Length: 390
Ligand SMILES: *Cc1c(COP(=O)(O)O)cnc(C)c1O
Image: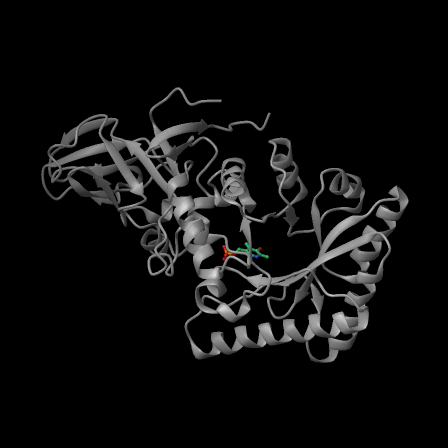
C-alpha cells in the first residue's frame, strides 16, 4: 500500500546502507562472515527491503527476534540463512524446518523439546547455541560453578541426532562502554565464551562452523572478537557514537512538511497546557508529526527541527498527530516546505540523548502510519506503508 498523503515520512537511504555495509566489511575482513541484524522490522527501517539489499550486497546471514519476523522475510523471497535470536514454541518446529530457519538454543530443556519435535518429524533442525557469559538474559549458564554443567549441557545438545548445530554465540552487555570496568567486563565475557566453545569442541569432538559474538560496540572496539562472523545492528544503520569515525552514514531521515503557518501576538499560550508562551510576535508553523508517529512527547520544547532556512525550535507540547515550531527566523519557510526531524543533518544521537533514550528506541518507534520511502542512486525507488499486515 502507498500513502496518498504528503504528510510525514521516513526516507530510507539504501545508498547509505550500502556504504555502511562496505565500510564494515573492509573493517571486519572479507573472510569474516557478516550477519545483519534486522529484528524489529530492521530497527524500524523495514526488514524486507533491508534484508533484500543485504542479500544483494552479499551478506551471509540475517537475524530476527521471532519466527513471525523470519517467516515474513521468507515469504517475501529472501533465501539467505536467517537466525532467530529469541525463543520459538516447540509446536513451531515444523515451520522452522520448512522455512529453513536457524533456531537459537538457550538451555537444556529447550534443546530436548526441539530434539523431540524434530525427531517426530524425522528431520533436522538447524541451530546455534546461545551462551550466557554475562548479559544475564538468554543462554546456557556457564559462570564459575556452572561451567562444567553448562559445557556438558551444550555438548549434549550438539550430540542430539536431529539437531544440526552449526554455530555458537554470546552477547555482550557493555561492549559500547568506555570505562575500564566495561572493558574488563567485555574481555571477561569474551574469554569465558572462548573457554566454553573450546571445551565443548573437545568433549563433542567437532568444531562449530560459526562462532560469533561481535555486536556494534565490539565491531567498533574489539576486533579480536570477530571470530567467524560479526553481528552488528545499529552500526549498519549508521547511528551511535562510532558511526562517524567509521565513515558510516545514517540510513533513516524522518521528514515532514509545514501544514499551516500563523502569526501570534506576544503572550500567546501554544499547545496543550500552555507550557509555552510566546515572548514576541511569533510565526508559528504546525507540522503534522506527533507522538503517534514516534516523535516522543518527552521531547516537547527540547528539539530543533531542520528547515531549508536553518534550525527551528519545536515549541509547546508535542500532540498525538502534530506539533508546533517557531518559524520566526525562517522567513523563507512556507506552507508545504520540507522539514527534517532527524537525519543526515540533524543527528538522531543527539535527539536520543535529549529524550533520555538511545537511537535504537527512536527508530524502532517510528510508527506504522509513517510510510517508508526507499532511496537508491539518489531517487525514490520504492515506498511501503503497512497499516495492516495483510
Ligand atoms: C540486537 C542484537 C544484536 C545487535 O546489536 P547492536 O547493538 O544493534 O549491534 C546482536 N546480537 C543480538 C543477540 C541481539 O539481540
